[in-house]
Length: 133
Length: 172
Image (cartoon, rainbow over all chains, first blue to last red):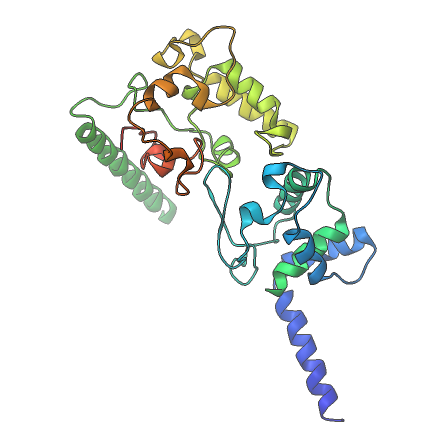
């Protein structure tokens, strides 16, 4: 046990470090954690929000994957035919590193897909999901 | 000095590119340099803010494809932009409107062929509803072309017009 604990701790630390490798992304995660009053986000919650068909928004785009696709290490496509860069941080390291851009697209796309704004908790969950892929 | 040299290099490279582009245009258009009145050429967006903000979901459509009143209506309604929220900060919206209006098909009292057939009371918000667009796409497009998954939308100009981003919309 004396040996296993340090190994597990090291493994847990390295996973956390990998997911938060970019300080700019970590700052955004911290910003949403502070706004939501939580200390942790759920990748499962983010997956559910992103991949579940929603009601309340536009019928043509009632799920995030309508444009972003279901393989998040691959590109998506807008309705007007433009390529959308991958959502998975592993495939697109620039994802979630610019708060202004992140806020701009949550503001637009949550309204389009859900017919409402996303909460800070939901936004943090989505980032956790794409950081885990 | 280094900066000066590299600036010169960039400038001369740019000049070469422009000359090469002009030569290419002459070749493509059988001796006639491209100009705004040509059916197949529309000057692309020159403004960097307009170019980046208006090209995130679709190509940045040339301002000369629509009259000023259409652009004003489109930008005023970005919260519901063909079913999507494409809203921007008010200062950005204002800048984009000013640019599009100043370079619209009817800017400066111009009456280009782009406005032929358009009723003065009409304010189309889709370029594909403009009479010139309908004329240009009426006969030579095969049925179902816009439903083809590789196209998918009448807003996907580049699917067929490979030079669209450079303003060249010749028949491909």
